[in-house]
Each structure stands twice: as C-alpha cells, then as structure tokens.
Length: 316
Image (cartoon, rainbow, N blue to C red; front, top):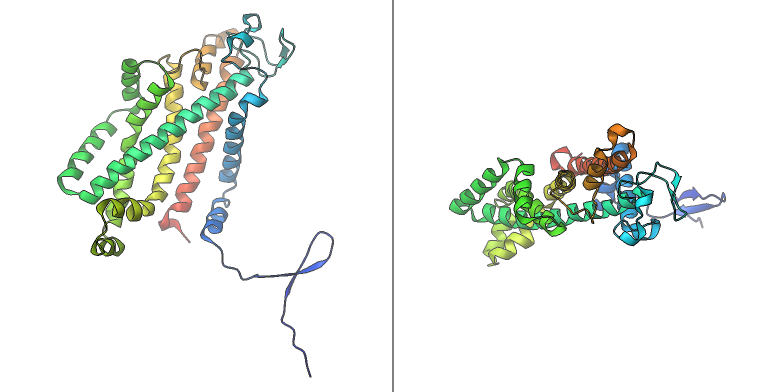
C-alpha cells in the first residue's frame, strides 16, 4: 500500500523552522489590489506617510506642545522674536523660535495645522455633500433643471475662487464659521460638475432601468445605486479641493480677512513674520510656510495617485 502526499509550500520563519503555507493561491481582494497599486509609486507612498504624520501631530498638539498659543496667560511678550534654540523665561526651549507676540512657533504651527486641516476637511465635506446632491439631481432629472443648474455652475466657475471668497469674508466678517461658509460657496460647483459627468454615464446603464422597473423611488435610485458608482472621481476631487481649501484659508488669513489674531492659522503665522523677513528674523514666516507647503504638497500627491489608481481607463 502506497501513501501519497500532497505537495505543500514550505516557508521558513526567522528561527529557521519550516511551516506549510496555506492558501498560496488565494485571490487578491479589491482593497488589497488598490493598496498594492497605490504603493507602486514611492513618491505617493512617502506623501501618504508624511500626511499621516502631519495629521497625527495636529491631533496630538495639546499633549506634545509646551505651550498653548491661544492661552494668553502662557504667552509672554518678553519672549518675542527669540531665535530657534533659545531658552525662554519659563525654562523651556523654543526649538523653532518665537513670533512677534512671544508664542512658541512649534506650538503655534501644530495648533495652526489643527485649524487649517479642520477648516479644509470640514468645508470640503460640506461642499461635497451639497455639490454631489445638486450634480446628481441635474444629471438624473435632465431637461430644463439640468440646464439651469449647469449654467449656475458655469457662472460661478468663471470667477476666481479667491475673489468670491474675499467678497464673502468681507461681508460676513472674521471667524472659522465665516471662512467655512465662504469656502463651501466657492467649492460646491467643482463637485457638482464632476458628479454630473459620471452620473450621466451611469444613468444610461441597465441596472438603473432595472431599478425603475422594480418601482424604486427616484431618491433611492440616485443615492443608493447611482451615487456609489460615482464615488471614485468624487474622492479624487475631494482630496484636491481639500488642499485648495487649505491654501485659500491661508491666503485669506495672510491678507488679514480670515481668522482673528487669537486663532492663528498657518496663513496668519506667515503674515505675522512677513514684516520681519528683511531684518533677519526669517524663522517667523519660514517655518509656518514650510509646514503649509508640506501639507498641501502631500495632499496633492496623494490625490494624484488616487486619480491614477481609481481611473478605470488606466486599470491593468
């Protein structure tokens, strides 16, 4: 009597022992394929790691910074414009120096990142919800409704975003909520145009006709069937528009019409040190500018790679 053995792949671990591998022919899931395709670009992988570190530092700012720049009791004017590495009157070292108000730049940058990221993400999410709903409605209904909505979108996109934001902030005043309203107003049209193009294609497919034959409501067809198939381009536009929102908020704060002095974002920190650049105190504007540059650059690189991975025309 002969005994047959099934061939097994053996994998050696670090101790040198051999273990039989199971499921070597396991199919790759869509998420695993997405991750592997995204990580094919070393630049995009580095941008994702950098963005994750920036977000983590911003979230942990109250626990990893020596000073709360919003608390005037912790800020001393005697520490104003100290160079990087100098020691303050309270005993701790200002590794990135201080600004004109005596705020520790390391603490101010991390707290400024919290504001910039929060404003960018929240305004981008609201603009995505509004724009997706409007664009989906125009593509699904069609006719005169689509024509009117698209003409409004074209009219808004014909004006520079910074000009509209400046006008709105000048009317509404300073504050985080006012900035968010202005950014949502200038951004929703991008999402509406993007999702309309995708929804026009999806509306002609068989599954939409089948849903109509089943008697499903128009709202369920739009938001439960068409919208999920339009998400990939919406995600790509969302990442790019988040970086655009952060840069717009920094521009408005730099011009003095954004956030108040008691809530310094990255744009306001850059503006505070602009007058000291020619006097040799470079760190007041340079370090917040580098933080803003790295944040926007990492978001844009992640968005570019997501566009390549989620584009069905480039799928291999």
